[in-house]
Image (cartoon, rainbow, N blue to C red; front, side, top):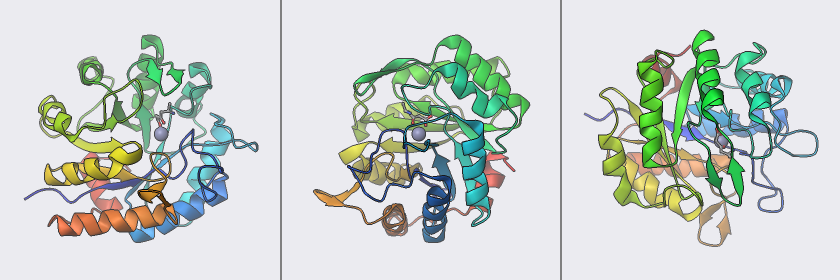
Length: 274
Ligand code: KMH
Ligand code: ZN
């Protein structure tokens, strides 16, 4: 019997603009509202990015703390803070999200390698990755391991060997970013075969890759992520009404696949997070 499907909503991201979608939530209260609607629809995890008053990505711990508060005052989802933040924010600032002690979340992202990302550079040097894993471990924040290429799995497993990440591991296969793996479902069996027993994984399809990768993940015991961070079109040429609409469609797909939708409580038990 396959596990229930964990639906993560990623409502904002670093790159999506109001020009691309007028409804992208930017302020902590907008993010709180969008996540509450998505949680009502069936999301169990909220993957969040902070923006400043100009709508630009920020690693300011106080904004992350405000987002977590806005979400927790409305719903029970597991809050996962992005430490990727945005391509223009230096890693020393990004580290403060988990090292400052200001942001009380139980999950945060860990991006294991530097890479070309769309038209920019995503800077994750080894000393940052190790410091991030160390800080998260010390604060009982569980990492979401974001894998953009096959070799990134091995880098994550090295951190496990060093005792910096505890099991069960949670992997995300991010596919369709320029500079990373293409959005091709045929890669999923290979990626899944590289994971240790007991790990969970989700497919993150960017743009038009979102729907086919969600369908493939559902057929393979995987989990899915939806939201404006990854894609704003519910179908070709049609903007989604909201992040919650993406979650409602994900729930329909999960049910059609014969699997159940996971609750936040299931996530907490499965991953051992608060
Ligand atoms: N900010 C992007 C470069 C994360 O959330 O940790 C990648 C990203 C990863 O969004
Ligand atoms: Zn993100």
